[in-house]
Structures are given as structure tokens and as C-alpha cells.
Image 1 (cartoon, one colour):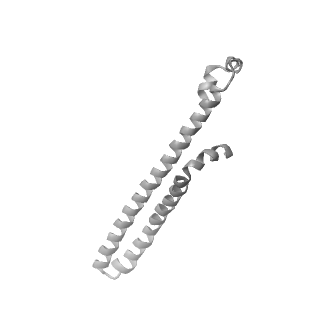
Image 2 (cartoon, one colour):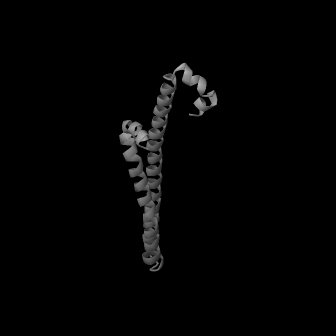
Image 3 (cartoon, rainbow, N blue to C red):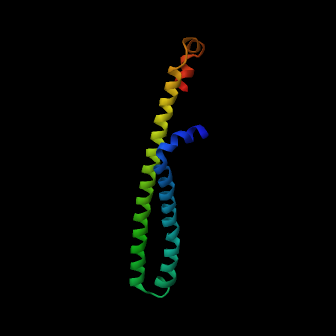
Length: 115
């Protein structure tokens, strides 16, 4: 893992923002049962229809915020993972290019392609 973290340094911002937005998404998802409980306790139980509509609006806002946080987290995570994978592939290719012909003769092509 220490070897991979070396390539992750170039994507420090994405590596920090992706989990933060995922945490934000989880926070929005965890607020939904609390709002539903308030709808039941204060809206339906006391027959307060405007309060129910207000809280349903809040649920819609929470859903929209949650999905936007999720999309943003996935975007940052994808950007970091594609960048790290590209750099790892390039480093592997560069390493194979530095092999001597004697080393290349000992290793079958399938091994080099897989690595």
C-alpha cells in the first residue's frame, strides 16, 4: 500500500474530498428517519397538515442534497482512481522497458502483460 500511496499524493484533494462528500451523503440519509418521526409525532398525530407538507418538502430537499453529495463524491473518487491507475500502469510499463533482453527472455509475454 505504501507504494500506491506514493501515486495518490498527486490526487490529494480528490482523496480528501471524496470521503467528505460521502460522509455528507450519509449524514443526509441519517436525517431522513428523524424527519419522518417528526412527521408522525407532530404532523399526523396532531392532524397538522401544513406541518406534514413542510416536512415532506424538507425530505425532498434532503434527498436532492444527498444525491448531489453522492454524485460529487463519486466524481472525485473516479478522478482519483483513474489518475492513480494511469500512473501505476505507466510506472509498470517504464519498469518493463528497463528490463534487459536476458530478463525479457526469461519472462513469458503473458506474465508481462498481466503485470
